[in-house]
Length: 311
Image 1 (cartoon, one colour):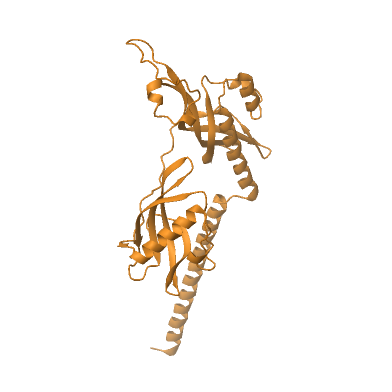
Image 2: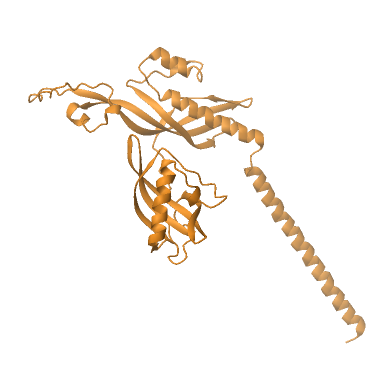
């Protein structure tokens, strides 16, 4: 084959490679630009994030006041007037209820200046129970104690039994419409009671702790937790720089089980125990202790809540 023909073929191959390289570069630039635009659309500017936070907090605060019914229409209207220009649009519901806590579970935009916020409210309602059923309610939750010093005679057949007012806990979820204007959020309607969102969390025991703790480690953990929960001095049980400090105010009731990641060389211990505090009994705890060995003895270098698939 003549040399000039070979040179033309080689030049053609080089030009083809250059053109392909250019096409791939352009294509990559287009994909990168699209990805950037997608992220830019989804990202919030500081002002947008602040407005979103204001919307959620306004709805949460309104939910607390709206869900607190103490029987006084004037007092109720005064509280709601902080959110509504005409609080008479929200009449006081019958009954007695108080909001104990509230948290926003979702905030979604439904238009240029319209938002809908879902708020979960933990409430306590005043309900009446038959006197016999009220025995199962802790005395602190009884509004008025009607029991006499001597046993009350049982109600005759067909006669209405005496009732006791008690506080009963409940959870309710509401959707609250909110409008925004000039960077400020304002309530746009009464809360609508909706089904409580079903949680997706899990409290299963983590994996990777198949061995029971050796006796010396079990004794160490028991001593450490006893001091930790009671607020004692744990200096001899924790590693330098661990950041683990005693809790205090609680008492270790018992340790149900201690499992480790490696019986011969444990670096983590899964502990299930029960603790108590004044007025409280049998609170279950499941924690993971990060362990190290120094001078032939175990030390705690970390304490954290246990979670599934612990690594």
